Image (cartoon, rainbow, N blue to C red; front, side):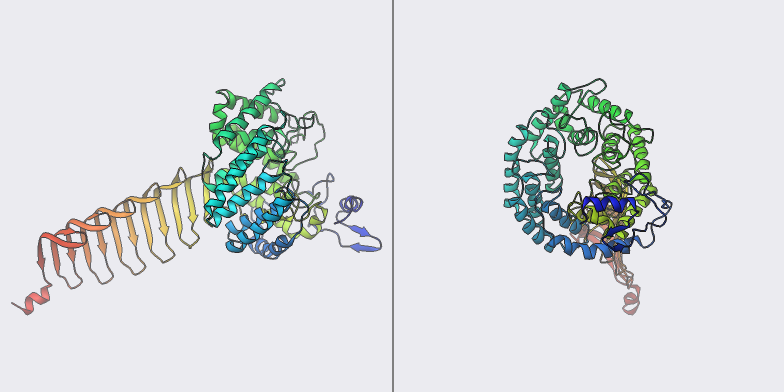
Length: 559
């Protein structure tokens, strides 16, 4: 990529990079211009989605994935090394945009190389060995290699000892204790075990809280510094630390009954320091309003505000998150340091996706898609500015993760896609869940499961529409098969149970009682020719007393 001197010239000339006598065409962004040396003026229309956005993103991803797999890295970290590429391949597979089998194979190969070049002294998700081991655990989980999963967990547990022994003030996300807590959260999510590594997590949360108390300043009941400076953003700063803590409610409660209040007070103090523009300073006391990105500025505070709004049921934090989102919309089309998640346009776009998932306001989705298409259309120019052009947090791997998340849908492990409302990482309220086989559920969710009214359409063409309890058909419902037969009645535990009416395309019909999916008890069966049986059934058979009457035509033929 271009040396720093040429990068600076590129920015000053709106994309016109001059190398010797050869002039490279400038970056054309409609009529956008560089305003402060760090971002382009945003004249995009957020009242609608970009034209052909999905075609553009998928086409770009199709060509980029192979390049990511072949990229060489000096480091193994998730942040700027090979580990981040492995994460990206797994993420794209979960999004249905890359073959799962090849993703696992490629990721396993990349992670083996990444481990050899990882810094064993570092114990965080983004930097060092722990992040690579966590990704290996996810890869083994996808391959159903449970013994290898457990070995990875044991390795992380041993690394927890190093995290506990970090210098007292090392608490931030990139290199400190909260970075190890990021490993815990990652494994709990992907291994589906909310109690995983509870003992070391509890101790590390306690250490982080006690460090914040010990260094508290006026107005800051929890205060943290990194290298003798109080940063405020998502990577090195207070926003990232608080966001990590609030995701661990049980461990946080063990650290003290007043800790939740201390977190809210510290978050309020963080917001008090905003510039007139609404942006956050990069560090306490800074008067330079220039950075709008994940590591410094408004972007890193959005996840914290959204989490506080959902956990502590405080609407004001949701309002603050949206105000920060408006700052990102105005100033988030970045023209420095490439297309990564830390200080690139895709990292800012992820803040819009988070806002959309919590508010369901279409404007945030529109904004995310505009940022995605902007980065896609100008990737050749903007990627030149990255120090590590294929990495996750500084390069195109981060852009690929963003382009693979269409915003309206959250991609779940195993290829499931969910569109709807989230509360505390659980599906709540109306939503649509699409399964890998093409089946689709549309209806109400409570505590992450279908509850209440809902409709499940199978890929076969069969449809169930009715009531649900804890993701099973229960109560009144109608099941219609592709061949035209149907059942209308009571359900329990996904089976016909109670009174129901079943019909077939030839005109046959049953009315009566069911038990555990079978006709059982009193009922009436009417054949298509008019014959009738009325009486007792057991396990789908006539059983007990009953009255059978043949069809009228048979009776008239044989007086």
